[in-house]
Amino acid sequence: MPMAEVTRTPLRFGQLLAAPGVVEQVELRGKVGFCAYHGGNLERRTEVIATEAARLSGASLYTVTQPRSMRHHIPSAHVDPSESPRFAAFVEHCDYVITVHGYGRQGLFSSLLCGGQNRALAGHVADHIRHELAAYTVLDSLDQIPKSLRGLHPHNPCNITTGGGMQLELPPRVRGLTPMADYWPCSHADTSFPHINRLVVALAAAAASWHPEPYP
Image (tube, rainbow, N blue to C red; front, side):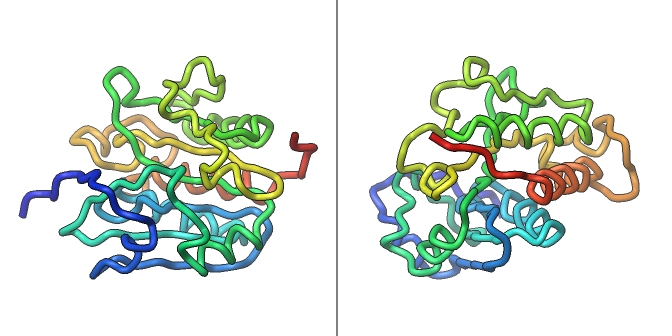
């Protein structure tokens, strides 16, 4: 069965959540939260990575998973807590948010991008990823990140909590979605997609060790 095409027709966040087969999940734990609202058949495995990192670190979690028949992209700035009581509760509960996204762009297939307005948190997460995934390039300088992937819009979910947050963009390779993914160099090789496990370990460690810093 071929994968559905990405659609960008006007659709509000609440309408997406009400669509058949869409699953919305929230788990309130720590004040750091992982968020993946383009999960499922859109930016594949992002919700899996966010879920596992939150579980390991005791962080909070919010995910939206689209079914196989659906690939609808709502811009991050339009993911509105006023249209979802569960998302509103997540935003109210968390001080810091790490949003997990997937992207694919020529020349950046081994690059992980750390955007968002809280640059201290972005650097903190980037350092942990570099430690676990030395074979990848981790970019946390905004000048190195394409403008459309920087996650700086004030209504972006990574920027609306009291402490702000960061946006993590993951290429297909680190999510195990390319033919060469199984052969990509990494430090741990006991599963089919070992680099996903190392990424989860890095994100969990970053969330668990994050100490709040002043946020403008």
